[in-house]
Image 1 (cartoon, rainbow over the protein chains, first blue to last red):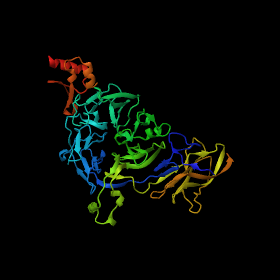
Image 2: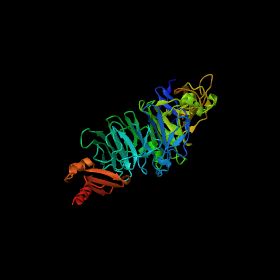
Image 3: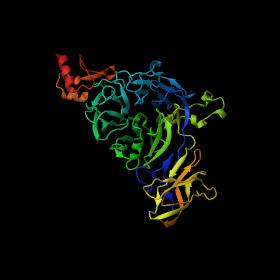
Image 4: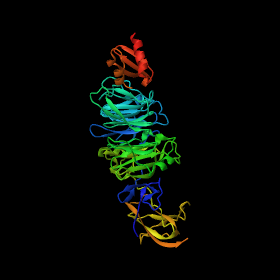
Length: 488
Length: 58
């Protein structure tokens, strides 16, 4: 029998006799099917309250400094014992973050900026500060921050949401428009500005418009701003992801990407967009946030689904591999998703963590400095960690098979995977308009490698489940053992 | 609207020296030409800024 390849996850469309699957979970797409997705493994102490923003900065000596925010405080990670030090302005409490917002951070040289609309722009000098301070130059209070070329750009301004404001050229304390190339730009149409994706050129996201801002050296206009979409904007402000030169975001019309110099292209159309929109809790868009995983070609969006029960946590991740052009869902809950480099620890400092190597909870690899960022999260207990644990329970189901006129007699199937332990089941139905019945699950036969399920039906899907903690690398699909049956 | 476009479009003496800074986190915008300063509401349009500046220059 031929291989029934593990299909692309496209829950928006029928999987009947197609190559798509409507049911995969906790797996990452590969060229030969799917591979495992690891579970969360925390490494920091817990923040005192829910994480509402986080960031890593690189110092000039290559070391990593990690910052995190709660609603009213800013913290810096102690790289020796992985506890959090309060670095809020004067160790005081900031005006509380609105429930629909998160803190945002940006690094400009040795300076780290933190912003939220209810607070004066905060700045921390990596070379000398012990706490954040108010940014000089009287910048406007803003919800969003980014770096475009050699300018710091603020948007989501508290007093004028239709405006962006940029600093002076290479001058983050110059906020007087008309001085040192600092200026603002108001947008009479397109709605509220929801954020700016930084880079050499900036992408300005509004409710109903997207524009590109390109620096024009020597020109009095400073930035040339061109509209690149009509009636298409940003749906969720924290869904913007910059992955190298590419930008990903979620518009009201679905998931999009922007290639360098290009215009937005839909990537979720007839794949995931309809399913996602139905699943998204639209009352908690602050939990719909994106992060890139630069170690791979994947980006991730976290979101709270309509079935999510925790008030301040997302309950699902949606991954997208932009080289394979494939989405994949992950079951994970947390407070804040980000790409981050791990701060390291010297061998001499290991005593601060544990007096005994045998007593270490994590492996020594977990304490090494990693300049290359990877996707991480704060879990529901406010701890920072990476997805480096044991493999999650994985599910891969085939598209629906059938012959329309004749019954199938299924004698079992063989999952093409190196998972030593896995289970197989067949869901079945007699008509396309009836609901599928879930068949009993059986353990793979260790002698034949086959899942021995017997079923006579007209339509069937073959599901492989690999238990949590199983070591495996690939699942390419299934080889069904099927005979033609009679007509009904 | 931006300072650059205001400088181009307003016909006021010294407009090429127009600047704008914020006060109170952005709740007040202070437009200046040399010693002359006017305080306007956030997002005031060019006509409002021009009128305020001309009034201050009288």
